[in-house]
Image (cartoon, rainbow, N blue to C red; front, side, top):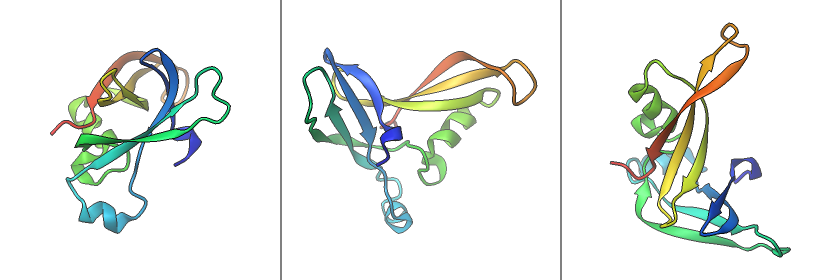
Amino acid sequence: MDVAEFSQINYRGEMVRIAPFQYTDIFKEYINFGAGVPYYVIVNTGEGNLNAQAEIVTLDEPMKYYPRAPLQYDLHRHVAMRHKFSYIDDWFFEIDDAGHPYWVVQGITKRVGLWGAKDMNNLIVVDACYR
C-alpha cells in the first residue's frame, strides 16, 4: 500500500487514516473475480500516537467496487456508466461510524478549456459493497 492511497477521516471522534486492500497479482484478482476485497486497514493517527498501529478490518460483505478492479467492478467505470455526462476528478475511500466502506468521487466542471481551471460541482457516493 502506498501512503498516498490513505484517506484521513474523523472516525468515532478520532483522526484515523484508512485504505482498502488491493490485489497485487492480476491472476489472483481474476481468480477472485466478483468476490471483492474483504479487508481494509485503519491506522489511528490522533494526538499522542507516536507509534501508531494498524488494524486490519474484515468486512462481512467484501468490497466489490475499487480502483483498478476487473471489468464492471472498476470504480471509474462504474461511476462513468451511471454519470455519463460528468467529469470525474478524484476519489477518496471513507467509512461511516459503523465501519461500512464508501467511495466519495468528485464531479467537476471544466471552466477554461478542457485542461484548464476546474470547479467541483458535485459529489458522487458509491457503496463499495453494493451488488
